[in-house]
Image 1 (tube, rainbow, N blue to C red):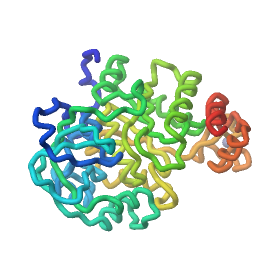
Image 2: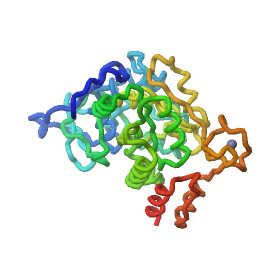
Image 3: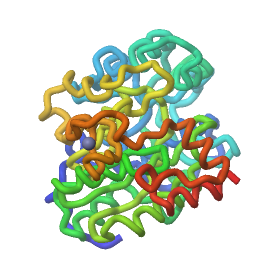
Image 4: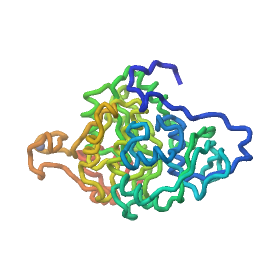
Length: 377
Ligand SMILES: [Zn+2]
């Protein structure tokens, strides 16, 4: 990594970019091993890189209770979702090794405490539902019954899904500074980018210096489009339709929680750590099913004072191509009737692609459609 001054960029959450990488300890083989789920491994990697600054490890009870109750760490700093490690029982010693499901040891945890938690309360407060049909709630209910807390030192980074797209916060910050960007908008996505989202990112980019396209590549539920297919879609879209010197494509290694509004805040805070000054929040951000109101993920930002988050959320409506306007637009900018709008439901798009049919160019770029048709074949 080249050394570039990054102090023209937004400060990390809490002021300092955390680095919890370190050396493999000599006594590793003598330590009790705690096995992490895929979600916990994602969190561990993000703790290591500072993506979850100011967190230095899995949350203790005081932070956890405060986050669940009032969306703040015990220090008062806004924080939207628990970052916790679930175990069956408290470890016997004050240091344990953390391993992934294959048994590969990744880190050491300095155990400060283990505590019971109320899954129903965490679900109600963080997911706004206790329904176990909700994928995030189902995962919470399936967790082990206690949380173990403490600072981590990660000596073996979790394998990135896309090594060439894996950039730590220090690296995206350096990349922004190198390009001379000060104001950067982050775009979270877990879907292929069709014309509607292309439009949002470009409208946002018109007002800032650069765009970070930051697709989530951690665990998602089974029916989301597979990561490798999505990445191919992003590449052909950026190659054909975005100026190279204004856009950075990198992978966001988080697992989806599907916590809707609270996850929107959490996503924004993480992107602030990556150096973004602005963050796009569409309708139903990080939602699933009909658990959240259309604008809940935007309205929740009103629960915080603007200066507290620092990163600026940019709220968008659904957009579409309007034949009468002759351009992409939204309900905010187009006065015409729905009949003029080129809109396809997700189900309709999957039907078309499944049949090998190319959706209208006003809805999806041909290059993106070709990648998806190939994948559906
Ligand atoms: Zn119109």
